[in-house]
Image (cartoon, rainbow over all chains, first blue to last red; front, side, top):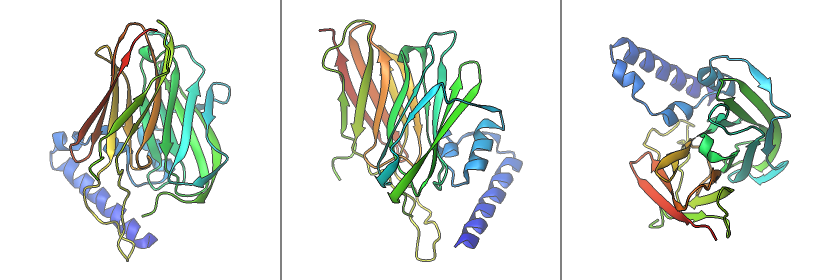
Length: 161
Length: 110
């Protein structure tokens, strides 16, 4: 199974290169953000692609990541992220990423916030395929990145496929 | 599933001017997962899932969720906004098949 998946990914990569080389600049830029987020990849390549290897600081004192210790049903796992940060036009939380390390599609969601949000908070129900870390990555308006992670034990996986 | 696209928005029962309110919303949507055939190969088709959730209040975009297939079926989202004036909160959901679903709630000061 892993062999076929490798082959498929390799094939996709070749296609992508061909499209880029074919002068299809507008084509290559066309895919919506969500499609580039929702790629079938490992968490390392996903993070490298989205953040381009920018340094991430430990946000333990800054970010509150609210996830269950044990998720009985991986199909519905409540996640809430709260960032202890001012939300003024000068300094605010630009976006919050939720990343599930062991999912086939590791980057779960990106939330873009604005000073009008009043508080840097987001909540969502996510899927978890298997036991693994869940990360919250916060991007401040000055471009700095902070991350925190927490392990969630999953009794029944929810990603299927 | 004729219920697809049903949106429910919940606001706190009392809101004072200047409060930071937490809004919760729920939408009925299948959020299809990747399917595989017997050989374990991903079936290539257009999966129907929500890619974007836009929250606007008083005509301004407050927050935007970019979502992937790792978000649960019938997704639930929560967010905050600063209630400065009475007005409508609109949450718009966009899915991969071009569907557009909207839910609104009125912010009024009690």
